[in-house]
Image 1 (tube, rainbow, N blue to C red):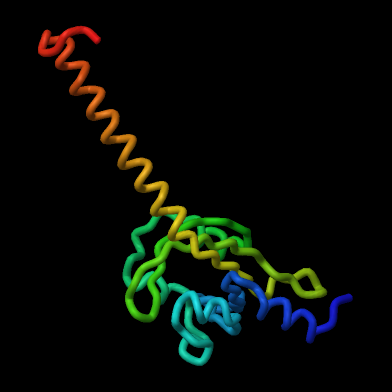
Image 2 (image 1 turned 45 degrees about the vertical axis):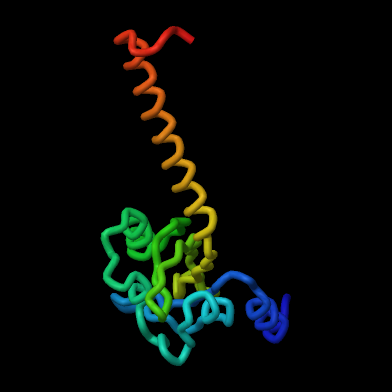
Length: 155
């Protein structure tokens, strides 16, 4: 069995944000965040203790990923979703959230643990690729139209 000091060092050493929220209550209040969460969001544990993680969406709550997260919270399940969150300074970032349930020795769900990974670079790259693919498709359609009307010679 791993001792508590080693477990704390491991969690503190993680490059990904780790949060623990209570299962009880409608808001699932945060009771712990690791230093990586504080670096990622700009919020300290003292600032967000006993709040629901929804504050990270800063009003941007019309995201499809949030439905899956709410379902996992309500039904004690697990999920992995990517959503927009906002740092304390107001800048947004893309967050891949892996959410899991934690059970006590009586096999009763008592907490949730969330691991948050900043995937902003990957999401922006995917968005740029999609934009370029759309431009290529548009240019191909224009070229096909020109060919069909005889506007250009056959290539």
